[in-house]
Image (tube, rainbow over all chains, first blue to last red; front, side, top):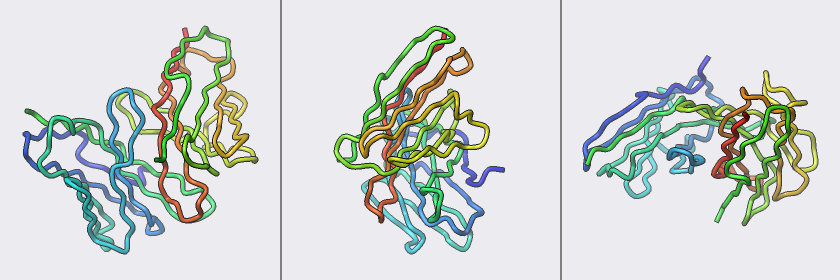
Length: 114
Length: 117
């Protein structure tokens, strides 16, 4: 059972448009929600992360929106650029004896057309 | 800051041999390191979690005698794939979490592409 459900699986956006990727979770004990960006043949890179005490966090062109009651969070990429073409993963972790291991979404392949 | 390196970046080995992959946190101390495996166009699959100075915790279905993990210091963890077979060919990625108790972030290495012939 996928604990973190990510959609869409793939996304095509025109340059300058807004890319939106959504994730939903079931475990209410999750208290940390990061987004990672991965280019082919490279390791994932932390993009932005949020804790459930805030509903939105913005860093440059990247924004996380968090809806605690709906158990959903999303990544918005404003003014999308061809260089943003990559695979994006959402994840979640919780406090406890599991060393804060990350539970991953299945990923979204984003292509930004020039 | 928060740089994690892996060595080698690519390795080709013959079936039946063993391969060691190193993961180093270059500018921070990592109490916890994680080892992942990733198949093409798939998500990351956690193999095991290691804490410095103690035995690794393996995820269900991961053979601990085949994938040996050692976390001997706060900056180095190693994964040894023993008696490698072609089905072990994959992209192996490590990550590290800072020693600070309040740290949540995992920082990832660039990955190691293992090909077993």
